[in-house]
Image 1 (cartoon, rainbow, N blue to C red):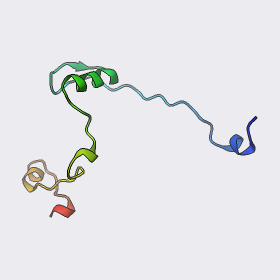
Image 2 (image 1 turned 90 degrees about the vertical axis):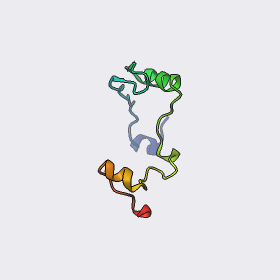
Image 3 (image 1 turned 30 degrees about the horizontal axis):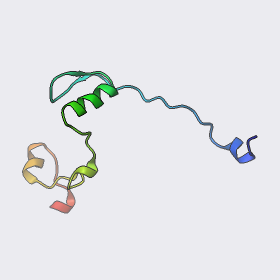
Image 4 (image 1 turned 30 degrees about the vertical axis):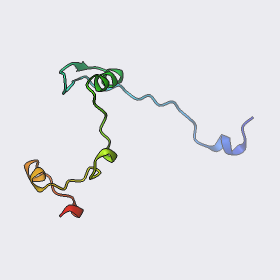
Length: 79
C-alpha cells in the first residue's frame, strides 16, 4: 500500500530515447544507422566518444591561430 507522500509525488513515466539519424563514418565511410552501429563503428576504428573531461583544457580554446582560423575566440584564462 502506498503512503500519502508516495501518492502525491510525480507519476513515473517511461522515457524512450529516439535513435540517431544515419550518417557516414568519418573514418571508414560506412553508413551508421543506429546506436549499436555507432558503438560498433567506434570500436572497429579504435575511437571513443568525445568527452570534454578528456581534453587537457576541458574544451576551452587556448591557441590563438586555431581560434582565428575557425572564427572562435580564445578562452578568457588563456588570453
